[in-house]
Length: 154
Length: 388
Ligand SMILES: [Zn+2]
Image (tube, rainbow over all chains, first blue to last red; front, side, top):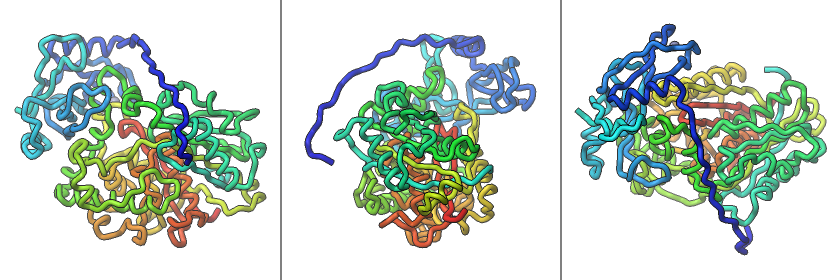
């Protein structure tokens, strides 16, 4: 490779979008605004899917059997994010995890918080796999996934 | 599997920080090398397949417009295939199917990325929906950390053992990269260096993680008739398989990882492999994160469930072990994403044709190449052999 530095061209792109939620996700996210977490149940495989879907990805059938699942569940796995990168929901360190809510057959991503994150050993002690967690709600709700502020160990 | 298909030539750029060339120049560097390696010229090619992950990595939406000239695509049909991290493998599959179908006799596959020209984490965060997954998936190490913790807990593997095995795997890959003239990161490290490197996302540390690379890989696929007529040593495609699973990360089990398990099963059936641990001579695993490679060893049946750590610590995957892994240094040392899966195919082809120079595995006859993509959503394989 040559030692000579060639020219570079700097530019930025900022692109506006407006994405449609559709009926199922509109209802799911409006549910969060009321502090309710909804799933939909597939009549073919009998699984309750959270977040709610308009069809089952395994059976490929339409589903509209709405089920309110619990605001509490079990921590399936987690990660402690220690470095900063673009588009993070908050400043590190913070924990994200997979939570299987009581009444759901699949897990969903969310933040796990409400305890001291600065000592890794304490985090490991606080978050054994299988730890029970509970949704903590944001004060201001916008019909958004972060209306659930985070899940807190109970 | 349709009619036989061979790989008759491969080409790679020197991967790394390639600000010394424009994107088309970078692509053409690998394409020219593939033509030189195979001894054919652009006029011999019936079609071109290209891909990147995702196009916007370099801020140019339709890379096949911009890069078509550099891929010798003028006057030819061109296809583009994109499947996130597994793009490079999917390009190989597309080229394979094209020749296999009989509609083309020689196809050029090109995987390319110039990751250092954009903000890679920002671009990759644009791969996810902004409704419910993006906030928790942006920054790949987090989801890989979750998969690792789930795996280690499931099989009761002591934390210290997982850590030692992953650190040793990092050392093995990095040592291997020292022999690879195309590799990006070429730095000798020790197990202690890995274990003391900064935590990115517990349990993943800096030296468990791949770099951002610029690079291109080109591979030429040919029919049996053409391959024999050209007469250079060819790598024969013995097995091709790909599996997807649900988009929502929490729908699937990422330990008993079905897309990995099922696609290996299909590729082994095609290749007539019943004991992959014994029959394969080497593997080129798509390994952006050390911990995940350990889990993949188990999903692909090289190691028993929960035993990959023992195998790595016992030297099974060393360069002189029973099943050398990523003799190229893997994705861990070189990661131009859209090319990374195709590099696995190219490296496997070089091995079974005896062209791998300093990193040649003695007597290699059967090699497995792999790539994965999405939020653990896709796995793809191509198995190559030295004989038809
Ligand atoms: Zn179903």
